[in-house]
Structure formats: structure tokens, C-alpha cells
Image (cartoon, rainbow, N blue to C red):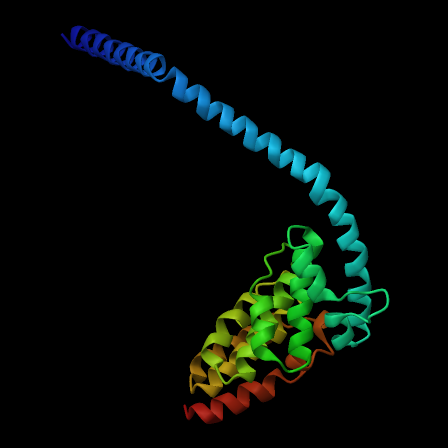
Length: 235
């Protein structure tokens, strides 16, 4: 009896499959013209993108990369105004690169350096605008941008918003960076009176401390942070 039921079930499944196949074939037959148009559009879009990529974006990528290199040099030399606006001689500035080469990797990368430059100049609103616009995958810039966004919010008196960015930056796969941003997040928590959360982060820094982290103020002075937060907490 069980075998008969199993056979009947298999026959039903086969019939369902055949019906579905038949429906699909019928749909294709009825909509062959529409499907051909859709396929043609897809092919045209792909071809157009490849054309733009090869004839427009890639050549401009090289131009943007060369200009960005100069901007990075100026940024490293702490010449932030010139890095942003150019020198009126042979460098047009990071703002120009970002505006005119925005589709290129270098154009997008320029946004990060623009944001960092504005932060250094104390223009926190402009810094946030460009830092939040950066979406690159460079590991170092990723946590630097997140941490600087946090710093901007602290400067604007918005510790609550800063905390999430500090914690995001603390996820960096870099043992020299993690404690710095954990302590920054802890100090932000303290400013909000949330001492338990601050202590949790400080204790994590202490527990994870290693010889390679010696010389990092946030690690060397972690006991001071813990003592201060404990006294403020009153527990």
C-alpha cells in the first residue's frame, strides 16, 4: 500500500513538473518579442557600461590618481588649505578632483582627504559632509574616517552620535588602534554620565593590553581612566 502511495506521489510530482514546464514554454512563446527586447536592452546597457569604463573612466582614473598623489603630499605636510583648494600653479585641489573625477576611485578617495582636511581646519560640518560621503574599502582609511567622524561629533557637543563611530573604528584589525578608539568611546560615555559602559571599555583595554601596545597613552594610562570613572560612578 505504501509503495502504491509513493508511486502515486511521484506521478503527481512529475505531472506538476510537466505542467510548470508547459506553462513556462507557453509564457515564452506568448512573450517572445517582449523578452527579446528586454534581453536586447540588457546587452546594450552592458556594452555601454564597458564602453564608458574603457574609454572614459579608466583614462580619467589615471589623471585623477596623479593629481590625488599631490594632494596626499600636501595633506601629509599639513598644508590643508592648499590641499583642498590647489596652488593656482600645477595643482587644482582635492575639491576639484572630487567634483570633476567623482566616478573614479581617486575621485572618491579625495572625499576622505577633503573631510580629514576640513577636520584639521576646524570646519566640522564640512568635514562630516565629505567623510560620510566616503565609501572606500581601504582598511586604514575606513577606521580613520569613522574615528574622525566621531571626533567631529565630540567637537560639536554630540557625544551620543560620536560613540557609535568610535566603536566602529575600534573594530579595526589593528591592536595599536583599537584601544585608542575604545578609550575615546569611554570618555564620550563618561560625558553622558554612563560610567558603567565607560568602565566596560576601559577594562577591555586593560585585559587586552600587550607589550606591543606600550607607548600608547590610552593603554599606558588605562588604570587612571579606570580609577577616575570608578570614582565618578560612586560604586
